[in-house]
Each structure stands twice: as structure tokens, then as C-alpha cells.
Length: 211
Image 1 (spheres, rainbow, N blue to C red):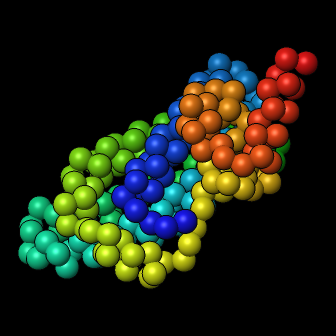
Image 2 (tube, rainbow, N blue to C red; image 1 turned 90 degrees about the vertical axis):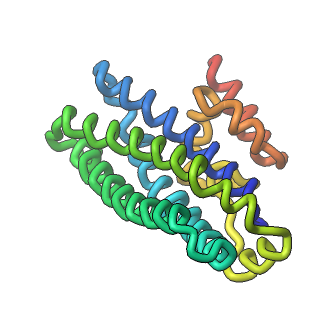
Image 3 (cartoon, rainbow, N blue to C red; image 1 turned 60 degrees about the horizontal axis):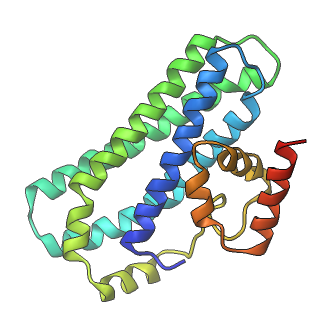
């Protein structure tokens, strides 16, 4: 996939859908459901796997290119430093959330309050981070990078595709995809649906829902 500003915005929209689902699962847990932990863990692994490791790496390449064009713009460099710290802290929050959920999946005692606190911290932090980025950094990206810049940046990073919202859904993330299709991420999932295999999976999901 060629990297563009639209690609970065799409990644953000996809993550917002994931956070919406995560919030709904958290609500279910708080209301006594014990069926949400497996998909919850997979969502956390996805956030660690794709947005944190792949999307952020692409952003670093973009921010570096913009930095060359904006010179010594203090606000830009200050905001980028804020985001870099955010990325590191969010990665730590994700690890804490995965560790909190782990005992529940292993069938041992876990503190529901602690799980809820760590998940709500992650959800709120990610949402505020995305908003800050789009309000303060992406306008510089739009203003200072042209087609040639994007071509050069794309050549520096490996091609990547979202394992849930791309053309091919990774097997261990199918559970998330189906939950999004039936829930608050349905619109985003349907926008990303482009190949026949995915459409077939969606039709099976839709049929099974009413059986």
C-alpha cells in the first residue's frame, strides 16, 4: 500500500472503530459478561501489533520529511516531541492492559476494577492522542509534503496493510472483524470491504447472526 496522508487518516478512522468496540466490550464486562475476554485480548494485541508498531513507524518517516521542510518551526517540533512521548507511554499502557487481561483468560482470579481502569485509560488516551495529532501535526503534513515527497517516503518504508481492514484479514483477527461488522465499526468495515473472500466472510457472519 502506498503511503499518503489519506492512508494515515484511514488508519486513525480504523483505530477509532476498534476503540469503540473495545469500549463496548468493557461495558459488557462491567455488567457481568465473561464472554468478552478472548476478543478483548486480541484487540489489545492488534493495537500493539499494527497501530503502535506499523502506523507509528510510518508517521516517524513522515514527520522527519516534514521537519526538513518546516525548518525551525518551534510549535511543530514541540508537538512532534509530545507525540513521540505519547507513543512510548501508550505502548506501556497497552502492555499493562494485556497483562491485566491475561489472568482472566488463564482462568485465575483477576481484579475487574483493575482491568476496567487500564482499558478505560487506553481508550481515553488513544482518542485524545489521535485528535491532538490531527489538529496539530497533520495540517503541517498536508501543507509541506507534495507527491514527490510521498513517493520518497514510501520508498523508505516497507509496504504494509492493515490485518483487519485491508484486503486480506488475518486469521487470528477474524473474530474482531466479525464483531466490528455487527457493531459500532460496521460502517468502517463495509468501506474497507473490497474483495470476494471478505464479502463471503461477511455473508457467513450475517447469516449466523440470525441462526
